[in-house]
Image 1 (cartoon, rainbow, N blue to C red):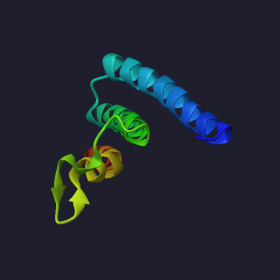
Image 2: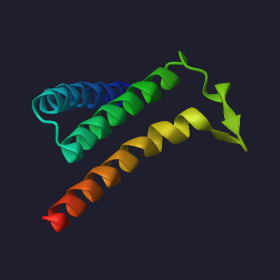
Image 3: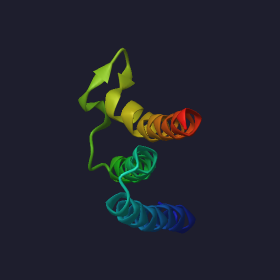
Length: 99
């Protein structure tokens, strides 16, 4: 791994850790469903970054669970944060509409 690639990876992990820490703080201070889902999305995104890093270093085997040629762990790691953000925004919009 070249030095620029390592710096990019390290910066993504450090900034993701800070965002995850702050998401956990927000999660503990509020019980609003939209904010909890946003926090869960940030945590899932960081987990996806950690998974990608472990896969890059060869610590995690990518082909552990494959369905129709698609690695399930990679599919979840890539799409779960977006699904949680969609749910958070939907809850926010629907809750504002009801009032």
